Length: 227
Image (cartoon, rainbow, N blue to C red):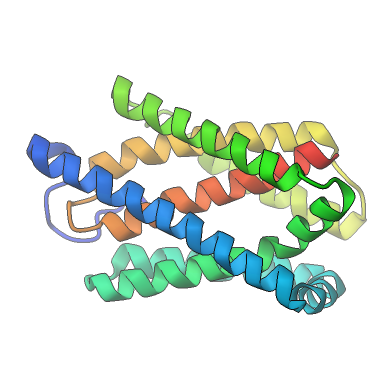
């Protein structure tokens, strides 16, 4: 996200009015992505499609994991580099769809095991994300020092998740807590970086960045609450 994808000045150098418009557009698109995610999940769960996804994903966990990582990274890359707003929207839509498919089995099993836990996890996620974004926006603190922590943290997390899949063991609640903390740091870092590196016409790709971290935060909060 640090790379500037065109030569326009970043939001931080724009006027107060332009910054305000950009921020509200980003937040509106994040909310839109969340609502779309909820709608897709409702369809997957009520249509019975989730049963097929469970068979496919649990039958080929490695393929599922790396397909998810690869497809989300591709969507992020396209959204960051695309000059066309239409292409950015297409990448965002694909990104939301990928997340919806990937987390559907986790939502299904969580609700089966503990009814109501999905709503609780969603509520905690929304409160946490709003608090983190507000902290970054109100304090205007430079959270760029979190870059190394977030980068290496996610690399280690991917290795740990792959190892647990290969060796067949569970890391336990402490790993969920660590992931929740890492994703919180990511949201703080991304909020600041969006203002420092994104021009005012990149609100769609900026929203994609925040949406991804919030969706993953929900998934790990759900995992923690159901354990």
